[in-house]
Length: 340
Image (cartoon, rainbow, N blue to C red; front, top):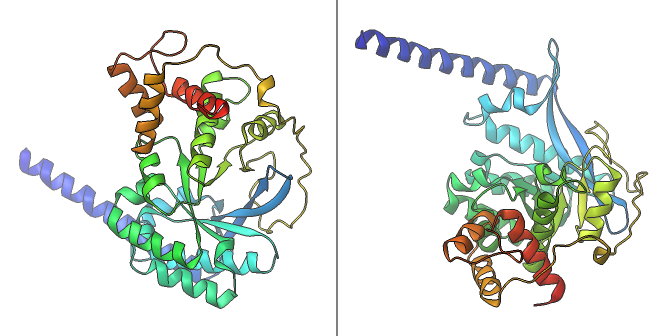
């Protein structure tokens, strides 16, 4: 029985390997045939409501399956030898598109294997030379998992590119436990607040507190802040009030084949810019709690980790309750607003 189970398991592994090899070869042929394309989702500067650039998103225009999103094909390719080729192609195509649109920037996602790949730096430099694009108009976006694969190699690659002038963004910020540590240690120039928090703006005090805290933290260490998944004018208004720099989402446009032009967004916000008009939780937290928060932020702790540490030390919020990520966000926001 045991031998049969092992045999079945080996058969399953062999079948998966075979399927992956087939998918890799299919995509290699698709790339050569011109079936792989880029779509671009615009990003807006919330300070002036102008399009500032776009995020490049890969698609497979499959002859049978139609336009496929990356989730349908990239997982099978990520650890293959084809992945560096795909990444190099995306970067080259994105640079070509944005180079033809003066004053605009482009962001490209890189996978965990890309961040650690020794060919990444040469691939980016080659694309910039070929398109005569200024490095600061290219942003590489990576998620936390891209760093934990091989933090030393990823750090080396990112620092070399940052020294060249390439912008580095940390995607899905606020969802991981190491994000703030990476923000302190790596040459990050931009953070992207995950859409799961942005969705609650105007409806959920906890989500609003987290967004406010993350915006304040980003600005405190000198990086720009992008909000993802903005779908309503009310969300955009609140992001303006909170001081967020940039936004992207369906409110401003869905991913399209054409690169956006440098123009004003048709979706205007009220630009009230009066945070004091919005409801805030009353009361003040103790000086001891404030000092602990500052110290933990300096150590790169996440909002969740800060809350846990405060609770272990018996510290209370302004209303005498236990700490959560949202209440830490409220506290950080209040501390920066008051200058305390």
